[in-house]
Amino acid sequence: MAIYNPKSLKAEEFINDGEILETIKYAEENKRNIPLIDSILEKARPKKTADGIHCEGLSHREASVLLACDIPEKIEQMFKLAEEIKLAFYGNRIVMFAPLYLSNYCVNGCVYCPYHYKNKHIARKKLTQEEVRKEVIALQDMGHKRLAIEAGEDPVNNPIEYILECINTIYSIHHKNGDIRRVNVNIAATTVENYRKLKEAGIGTYILFQETYHKESYEQLHPTGPKHDYNYHTEAMDRAMEGGIDDVGLGVLFGLELYKYEFAGLLMHAEHLEAVHGVGPHTISVPRLKKADDIDPTQFDNGISDEIFEKIIACIRIAVPYTGMIISTRESQEVRAKALSIGISQISGASRTSVGGYTEEERPHDSEQFDVSDQRTLDEVVNWLMKLGFIPSFCTACYREGRTGDRFMALCKTGQIQNCCHPNALMTLTEYLVDYASEETKEIGFKLIEKELEKVTKDKVRAIAKQNIDDIKSSNRRDFRF
Image (cartoon, rainbow, N blue to C red; front, side, top):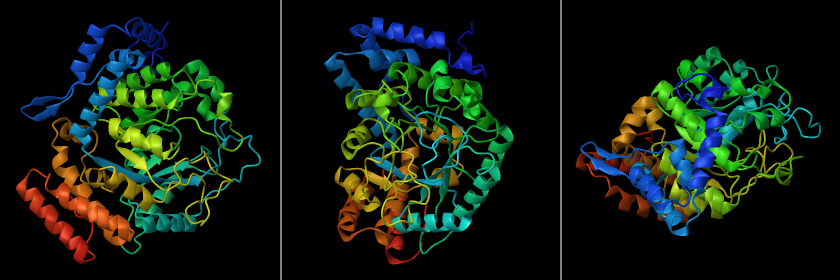
């Protein structure tokens, strides 16, 4: 039997089934142990230090106790703590991005995804470089600066050379005042050599969802294709980091397996990356299984309610305070609003999950990967965020200034990231307002920027930010950053 070892490079040792089952048992036994719960909450609370604000975070076992707790008063305390941590390290900034689907050709047999190779009635499509160009211009014309590219796994139709060519095309397109400044990549597990090529191509974060950490379920859900190999998939982040990619993004597809198991596995994966590489995941995504072509989520009996979903988000934020958290347009406006205050720091806007979807006036449904619940335009999402008191940020400065991996985390852990991120968010929001926003959104936005500038604590930084914002308004100068 495999022994739990977070420093191991073997999947069955750092994601250890016995340890997860023991954790769930321990959490169930202690879910109403108020002294223990209070001590866990106290441990997780932000503390002021000489360097700024420090958060210790929680182990997978401690966080699982909070997730299991069913005492309303303690749950309320968890939500308040999650909000406190979110504000301490991310402030009221929300980073904006959009997915770009390059190809839905896929050789895998994943039973929860409409791209599975047996699905003969979904329209299969792969973008040419000219089509990539048109999609990117459409996204630039909305105001997007950050993309997450997606593609099915197909070594013939979607080889690494195709992905690299697409990345090169995306970065090469300068349209009016539009530029894509960061390309994150969500493609199948691959080799160290291919990860090195992605790094050399200038990607931001490499994202790979585990789908489920339960090995037996994983193998049943992925009956055929290269993705069937649980160990190869689960060990992908170690290969990515060996290939030089220091920003990686984790996630599970909630609804495939019991959520308490997935939650513990997700945090164990984060602990493993910290133990082996000295830096945890840059982001954690929290997608839920949704309806799609020939996929009925009710066939899976592990769906979770909005209440449980929100509790998961809060507990992840408490456990890994410095990690960015992403929620997609799979979720409704109402669910996303609640999630923003308790942990989420990045959201997609105006997403289309079909190949070639952005150049179409009407949202195409024939090649969507999943149904989009939040179908608002980017302007509507930006407007809504500002009315809620958030700053929509199109910033990509940390990635482009080399503040990635342990360098980003070092800044984040001392709170110094605020001196960069807050003014950067305001400058990139100004770009959006000047170049793309509706009149109503502009009016709300400029008032918000004026108010938020006063929160920049360093006089010199505030003065430079104000000058840059004036320059953006009065000229075509763009891309200022700290």
